[in-house]
Amino acid sequence: MSQITGNTKLYGILADPIHHVKTPQVMNRLFAEEGHDGVLVPLHVRAEGLQDAVQGLRRIQSLKGVIVTVPHKTVIPALCDALTDQARMVGAVNCIRRDADGTLTGAILDGVGFVEGLRGAGHDPEGLRVILAGAGGAASAIAFALAEAGIAGLTIANRTEARARGLADRVAKAYPDVILSTDESAVAQADLVVNATSLGMREGDALPLDTSQLHAGQIVAEAIMDPAVTPLLAAAEQAGARTHPGLPMLKSQARLMAEYMGAI
Image 1 (cartoon, rainbow, N blue to C red):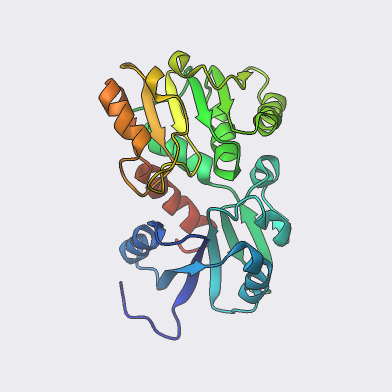
Image 2: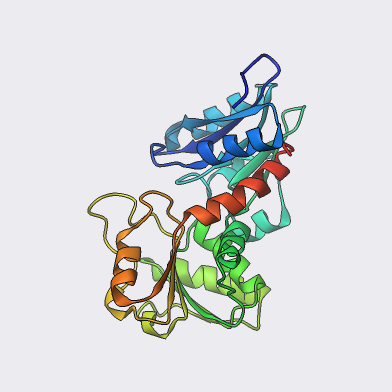
């Protein structure tokens, strides 16, 4: 990283907890490679302080953008001034551009980054049957991006079935050719298994899906960055499935986010 001066552009990542985030390392490396005089720093903000924090960010003239992650993605759209069409459809934001007048425009790049990461590893989702654990902000973005990528079917597994059904209905409305389900027991029938929950981030977490159904021939993918090998991926390796960790999603997203925030 080049020396920070009074001309350096500021970027942040909002999260709670924040110890696990890998975005600062990836994004600052990208800034250095591109010769951009900017720095991205972690901003630990709890839910009860989010509104005040966002109002403060509007006033920082050298701030050009903010990345948003767990648990703020589905709450922060209401604090933005405008949303991209995709963010409005998904109902979540993970990247905010701050204009010179303090206007905040939210976008959702999780899903596109996830699909690009898959393709970069040689896993084309087109035509696959997918089971997706989660129905929150990241899961919603991934669901829409997979549907856009041409998957054949999507099963959404969530501990609150009504929330899974709500996401399935929204995807079905936008992509009527995709076969939708909320049958969380259908792990064995999937070609691609995706965890888009936070389960696996902390020691002692429950598994997001029934890993006894995993088998060779499947691709098992994570959205979690840390740990690199989650209990789900460990179980997938033991079952002989191909695994796809969370870091490629972040690396793909980093460039998309930098472009959106005007850094490159």
